[in-house]
Image 1 (cartoon, one colour):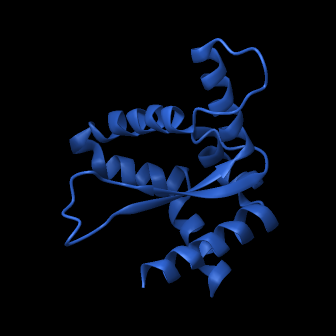
Image 2 (cartoon, rainbow, N blue to C red):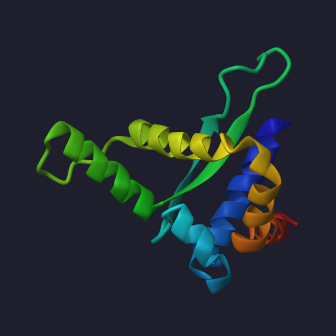
Image 3 (cartoon, helix red, strand yellow):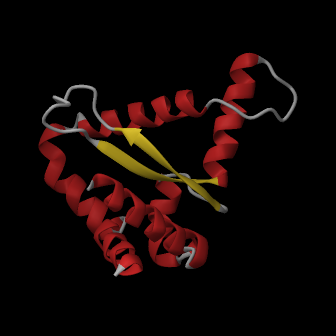
Length: 138
């Protein structure tokens, strides 16, 4: 059952970001800036979201759209850490770990959850983006 949901999500991401290029729309500019999203949609990363759930009960994943700006940041970080001067690519896992640390810091705000949700929906237009993604597969 989950594979069908994943498949539909990837189809929606391709339509939303490859065809419609929603990440370039003014309405989603704040979200693109905060997620450092620019350029071409490359692929969808499928990530296990939590190490603490009981896998017999649930298995959480995140589906993350990945763009050229993310690939560029990964490569730059990788080359810097390893002293590589060529344009060699790499460093996805380390880059993801750093992004996770940034999000964890936001989640530590605890009692500010309502403000976070309001910011996500009013400023970043997350609810509107969700509607557009749903429309891509309807």
